[in-house]
Image: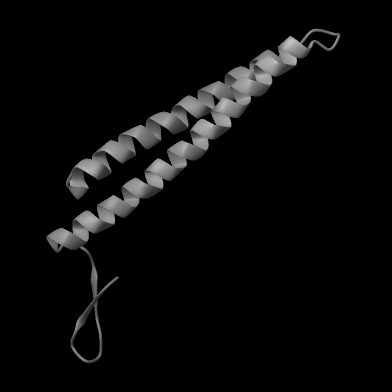
Length: 95
């Protein structure tokens, strides 16, 4: 698979996972806010697991976005579009 395909795929998956995680955390907050006056284990478990899944989704999404940035850098280095810093001896070094 080329760097461009990996970059595109990982960026779309990452942004989708971050959005999904934010929605799940918001849903968990709403469920916790509507809690009954007395403690119910089933109700606490519901918002806990939904919130936990939201946090996991956000972390996975951030990881995918970071990997997409890495793939983009590799793609630019391969195509020669990456910024280059000139050393004093005349050789080039990638920025």
